[in-house]
Length: 283
Image 1 (tube, rainbow, N blue to C red):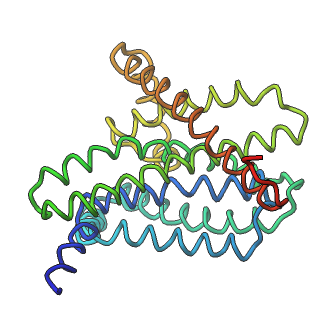
Image 2: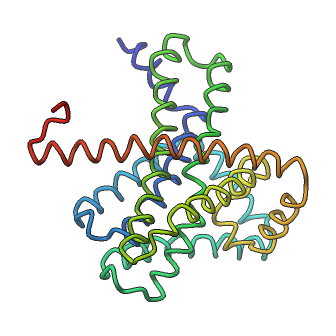
């Protein structure tokens, strides 16, 4: 029994699962921000705080297998990275703390109040949103994990692949719900005609973000830590044929999967609405 549990634990406690759970953590950040920014009344404060706690747990689970490597990297930066790098590291920590505080402030304020915190949260929402569809590229971790030979075959089939598949679906569903919350906000403010153009623009921006993240290894916080490099890299890929082709295919995939998942999500929402009213959907 002990060896059985150890085999199952191996599916969770490895670098491949660490990456996908960490990326799932990043995918749910814009989801929580979307509720605070666009649908404050749709989720009670207790549920929202519980979601934040759950999100923190997912982040710890994702970071844990990579913690020794991360600690070594940070130690090298602090000890040998030089003054500029240390200042960037300090700035990143400050930004992380401010983002957490900002999300709480946004959620506690009224929906109609669009002050500095709201606009800053909106920028953070769009900066982190590409992390949600980015989980689609985590299929690479399934391939690497199943071919690494580090995990028993039966664990790969019954635990590793289902776990990663669920994580990918949940991450993309966070993307869908985040945009639906924005669409609900636009509709309430008399801008229903903008919903489709905004959706297409978001898919395009996320296609660029996914390319920058997967191939150039940039992160959302690089926008704050090193915005000049992000801008330079973005302009570079937008003027190159191959990156543009890759981003075009990514845009088509995002738009298609979003449309499909949107129909499923709205259908489930409608079915729950019918169930609350005692209406049988088969009637």
